[in-house]
Image: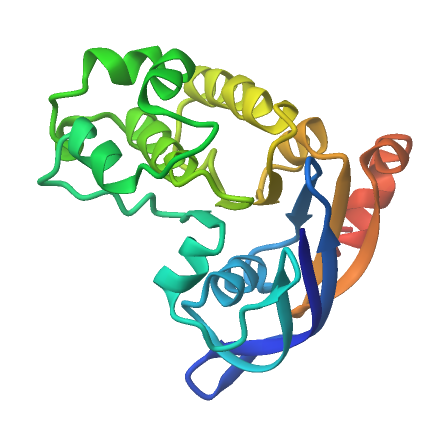
Length: 230
């Protein structure tokens, strides 16, 4: 579903991601892990079209994204849950859904089944929601676009442990649905290994190591070593 080859880019004149290649199949969840500042979020921003592309190929379902504008990437089937959620404070939950929805598997009734708490807050402004509810809203908004691929950047960041636990359970439901591909950036390695079938470890904008999560789980010490934490 996603084919990235030789991708290089960053912000302004600064190159952060260099010669990066990866693939994600339909129904597969791939996690990107690594220390802070190694380029994980920038990689997602490049795929989404928000960071500065320099060279390389980004193909979604065989279509070259190249220099396409963000909204055109979305129309081709790219969904994005940004690190800071970026919900609209002055819009209600219902208004977010009405703006985002496109025909497909995920409908507003299905979203309310997935996130029951949003159903009871459907007329609340996004600014009135808790951090966990805003994260649910950001994920729901992306799903309602019925993407082929969804990018998730640090979905657990800044949330209380009990909220993270519930949110991860919901994310697993989405991932196990099998109707889309997921590329997940997650600082918490335990979460990444729990939800993904394959993990890529980044270092200085490049791939330092990639493996199935099953292989990584067999040796926790190797993860810290590969991430440069020991």
